[in-house]
Length: 168
Image (cartoon, rainbow, N blue to C red; front, side, top):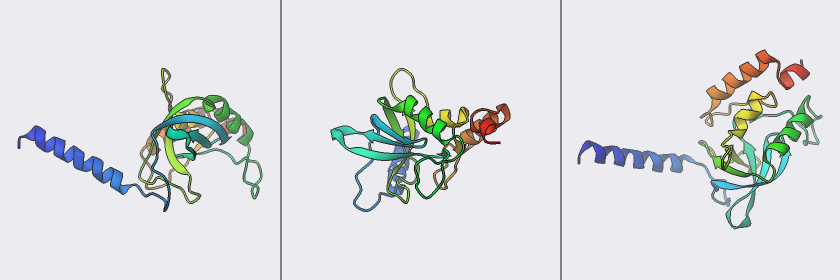
């Protein structure tokens, strides 16, 4: 084997290890990579219709928007604005979903980083933090974009964007 062949084998083994490290909830379906957003439940949770018409709850990974739908908690400052922004940004749009180490949260929702698909490839999770609609919410071991989100949060806070201005 030459170095190129060894590199290919190593990459293949790394890919298998990454997929094997995902934790599927018992009885859950495999994740899908693309779909269409049918509804924004709140600022950080969306419903996505994937192949075959299956609809899944997707929790945007690495971020947290103020609460708007939990009946046990009051509506958070800037929560309605975050929900409206997410709804406007993604509803009816094709998205690409990327996963980190864990696939599900304790509520059975898929945990994903979401990009608008097509000509405008926008990282939705990052855009919510950049514009001040969300705070960073690192949840180990799902931390692939934690440094990016932290930098965007600092920038939004310093600039007084969104919740950083409204919720002082």
